Amino acid sequence: MNLTGKWKKISKGECDKHYPDEIEFHEHPRFLGKKGPGQNFILWDAGGYAVIDSDRVQIQIATDEQVPYEFSLSGDVLTFTDRDGCEFKYQRLE
Image 1 (tube, one colour):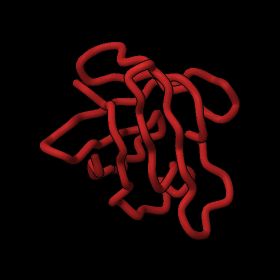
Image 2 (cartoon, one colour):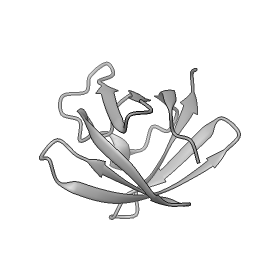
Image 3 (cartoon, one colour):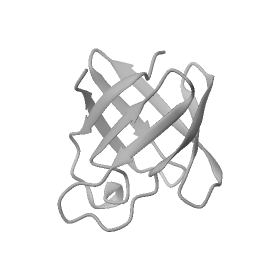
Image 4 (cartoon, one colour):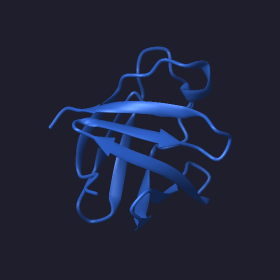
């Protein structure tokens, strides 16, 4: 699955408030997160990522820890589930 591109968070749950409002995944496995209005700290600020199988990706969080996430792509909607069971969604912008 191809994560490359710009994405805007479309979920607004309490558990996903520390994930960026927008994120861009680059081909060279790097990403850049962007805070939304009212966001102070985001776990995904900037770093590396690696797709480790068809439904799992490892993302370097703000503390530099490499954290696995489940993910799925349906059309232009990218869904992640973190290790605490929080599910959040992004819509492809580009």
